Image (tube, rainbow over all chains, first blue to last red; front, side, top):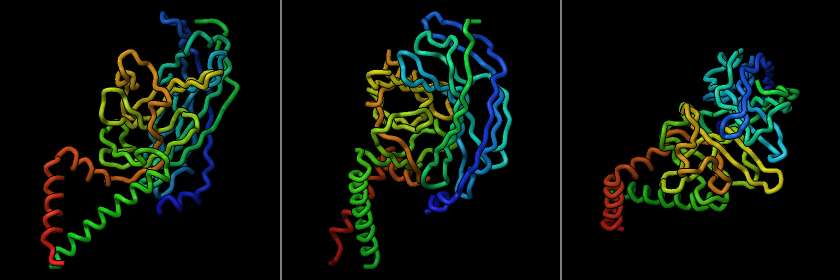
Amino acid sequence: MASLSDNFNSPSPSSQIQILNINWFQKQPHGNDEVSLTMNITADLQSLFTWNTKQVFVFLAAEYETLKNSLNQVSLWDAIIPTKEHAKFWVQTANKYRFVDQGSNLRGKEFNLTLHWHVMPKTGKMFVDKLVMSGFRLPEEYR
Amino acid sequence: MALTRQALSLGMIVTSALMIWKALMCITGCESPVVVVLTGSMEPGFKRGDILFLHTSKDPIRTGEIVVFNVEGRDIPIVHRVIEVHERQDTRDVDILTKGDSNDQDDRFLYTYGQHWLSPQHIMGRAIGFLPYVGWVTIIMTEKPLIKYILLSALGLLVITSKD
């Protein structure tokens, strides 16, 4: 089937994320921390495309641990890459989706930013992988 | 008559398809191994009429996965992507939030009133592959039941009146 040839593709995607600015960082009235940040997202996902690729869905998620939750994954941004030509990109953006904690645990919080991609085929099996970038940290104080 | 033979062959094909379906149910381990995409909220990735192959596993749900879930009070299952996951330290309870790729808003407005998150028990399976267009047969049969009755009656009539 079409997916069989996809299995022989050895992709070598790459990416870099920079946090340019913490726009604001507050505890909302409902008691949950929320942060808005602006990022530079650079990536080269061209090697993911094969003849059987319809599109690549890419998203960036913040991942962190709290006392209450062993894992929190919050999607901050996503995009649909329709062709190989669009797959090498640089984007400067604020988070598209709200970064809200379950609680008030974000001050000084260390977190990973993980770039995930879903390769959606014209027919057959979807391929999924990700790149974890660690070492990010939120401010100690609200602002 | 050659037409009768063709119709009977069609009947055989349909029966074989049903048998394969039942076999798939056992292999993939879920009630409904295949789901037809009914709305455009996952375009352009999945379009109305596409078929999704599902898999159930005990693996934890993570962001990015495309899941099929039911909301109480709604008949049709929804196929959307997980955009948030919060997993508890001790209990392994998980709060899940979903959104259609081409929707601006997340799915909270779809969940039952007062429910802010999905749990793993709401999720019927994960999409792992797909076939385009094939689901249109099901959509037509469901949305225009008259066509289904006509087809089934015609098939029945041909079987009854065949000379063998």
